Length: 317
Ligand code: CP
Ligand code: NVA
Image 1 (cartoon, rainbow, N blue to C red):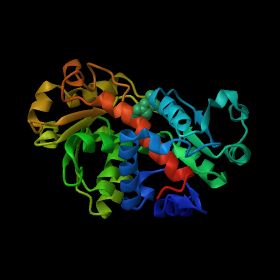
Image 2 (tube, rainbow, N blue to C red):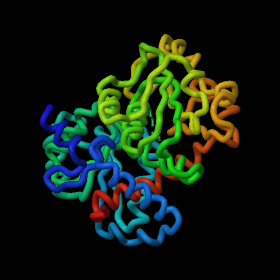
Image 3 (cartoon, protein in one colour):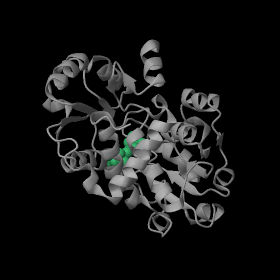
Image 4 (cartoon, helix red, strand yellow):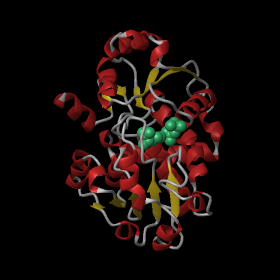
C-alpha cells in the first residue's frame, strides 16, 4: 500500500501508463500544461477534433453525477472517441467480482477507465490492476478533475492564480483536500475556515506544508476571507458522508453569504463545484450574484476534461 502510494505520488505515470489520480502525483509543469491546453481547447475547440478517434472511455459511477458524467461523455465525443457509463449494479462488480478482475477485463476492451467511488482505495486497486489509464472521477479523498476546471475558471477571469489568495469555508472534505493539493502545485495562498471536528485530512495538509505551500487552517471565517480573491465552498454533506443534522448545525457559521463576501477583496469571485444546497453552505444571494462564476466553472469541466483525456490518451505533455 505504502509502495503503491509513493509510486503514484512520484508521478502520474505508472509503468508507462498515464493515470489521472491526484494532483499530488504530478510535476507542476504537467498540470500547468493541461490548464493551458484546456484554455486553448475552449478558445478553439476544433484543435482537438479527431484526436481520440477510435478510443473508448469506460466510466463507472458508484454514486450519482451530472457534470462529471456528461462533461466526460461530451468531451470524448468532441475529440472523436466514445464513452460507456456504467453503475456497479450493471457490472458483475455489483455481484462481488473483484475490482482487480474488473480492471483486467476492462483493459482488454477500452482505452481508459474513469471511476467515481466512495473509497479511494478502490481507485488505487483499479490502478494496480489496469493496463490502461485510470481517471479519478471523485473519491471520498479527492476530486482532481474538478480542481482543473476551478483553476481554469479563476485564471480566465482574474489572471494567474499563483500568488493569489483563496478562502475555503465549510467542510474539510474531498474538495477542500484537493484545493490544498492545488495550492502547493499552482502556488497560491489558501486559507481554510472549518470547524475543528470537520477539518481537512491532516496527511494532505502535511504533504502541502512539506512542499512549502502557503496553506493555513483557522476556525475564524473573517480571518480566512479577509482580502481573498476567491471564496469557495461545497456541500456540507458529501456523497460518502453519513453525517446528519449535527454536522449541519456545526457548519452553519461557515455559510458563504453577502456579509462574508463583503470581507473578501472587492472583486472577489465565488466558486462552488455544484451541486449546491442554497441556504446552507451558500446563500441564494451569493450564488446568484455577479461575483458567482459557478456556471462558467461547470462549463469549464468540459474543457478541462478534454485536456486531461488528451494527456492520458494522446500523449499530450
Ligand atoms: N462537481 C461535480 O463533480 O458534479 P457531479 O457530481 O454532477 O459530477
Ligand atoms: N464533496 C462533494 C462533491 C460533489 C461533486 C461530494 O463528494 O459529494
